[in-house]
Image (cartoon, rainbow, N blue to C red):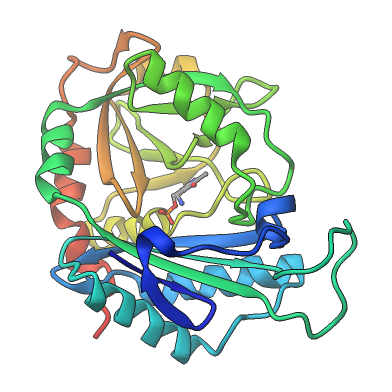
Length: 284
Ligand code: PMP
């Protein structure tokens, strides 16, 4: 495998950043994960838009132009011969002598890009069976709309899910409402067939898959309500599912051990999964 690190393509096993990289010391950086399907980047424009927004919120410069970054992404995908998989990009505030305050202007941000193949049969097998989720308190900071590499609460929640034999942890705020998953957005389907997902403010990441699913639902005439929902409402829902670039639309069959619907993947989630790539942007 090959990784891109600050201007060079290097063997993955030798790819390294400086010990004073602010991503390493302060989680002072942001990232994006983009699906590769049949060798093409999916929803590149939206991922680039969100990367630029995250950087702007943290006052980190773009490491290079959008166009140049697009070339690096494609070259990393090509050098790793990825047809089905993921491309990961991370931008940090760069390398500087350790000090909480920002380094002096002109310090170049650091860019790392990796790409890996993922066997699409794994996702399809999970979707065919459906996945289980557990719930955990949402103890993250109050700006999780920024896709920062500070993911310790998310890692703790995901590990708890793993140890419980579940696929994902849904995070629950102090008022008892589900915000999102540790690395996915959360959805339920009401008895009337209406999709419900939490509104976007500073309290969740506005998923690209979530946004593209809005497009698909508009095309299909499926109604979406953007509002909060509780764990109890989810457990009584007709269907539940999660979305992300790595999972697309993944049906949920249990929450904290309680079966959803008849305990099998729902037809609405399964149908939306099948049609997702008819509306997603396929980059050249
Ligand atoms: N929420 C969180 C916390 C995430 O980490 C992710 C995945 N990056 C998502 C939602 C889903 O976003 P996307 O559809 O852009 O992958």
